[in-house]
Length: 230
Image 1 (cartoon, rainbow, N blue to C red):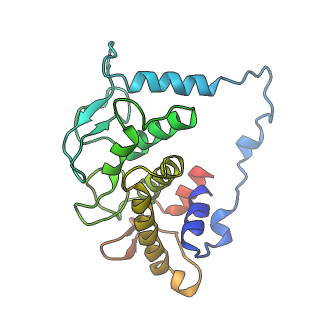
Image 2: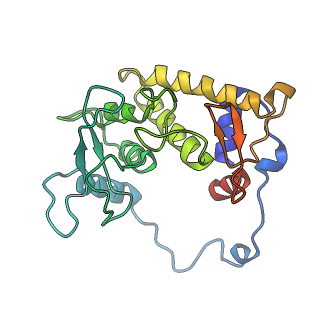
C-alpha cells in the first residue's frame, strides 16, 4: 500500500485499485484489538539508545562496534559508513552494507529528534553514496554499486527512505536534485509498465532500467511487496 501510494504521487500515473486493497487474514483477525495487560514502550527513548549504540565507533563487546567506514567512494569523493544487515554479518567491514538499513538508521534517529547532519560527521550527506551514478543507473539502490531489475523491494524502498530524508534535510548538498532525478526515472518506468495507456501495472518482480522493461523471475512479484508493506 505504501509503495503504491508513493509511486502514484510521484508519477501521477494511476495504479489499479486491486493492487492497493487491504486483505483480511483470519489468524490476525483473531488477535485482540487492545491486548491486556498493555504497556506502550518508549519508542523515542529506544530509538535514541539505538542511535548511541550503532553510531559509536568506540563501542566494546561481542560484535561491537557495528559501524565501520567505507572508503570506496563509489559515487562521490567522500567516505560513507556501513552497518551490518544483522549482528555478526561476515561482510563487515566491506561495501556490503545495505541502504534499507543505513538509510533507515539515519531516518529513525532523525524522527526521534536527533539531527544527523550536525556534529563531527554529516551522516545524512554520506547517504548520497547510494545514488548509483557511476554505473549509469542514476537510482537510489540498496548497494552503492549495483543494478536495477532484481527486486522492487530493494529498488523502491531505498527511494522511499531517501525521499523521507530529503523531506527532513531539504538543503543537504545534491539530495533534492537526486530525488527529482530518480523520481523522473520512476516516471519513465511507470510509463513503460502501462502508464502510457493510463494505468501502470506493477505486478512484476522488478523493472530493469537498462532495458526499460519489467522483469519477472517466476518466483515472486510486486503483489507480495504490496502485501508486505500494507
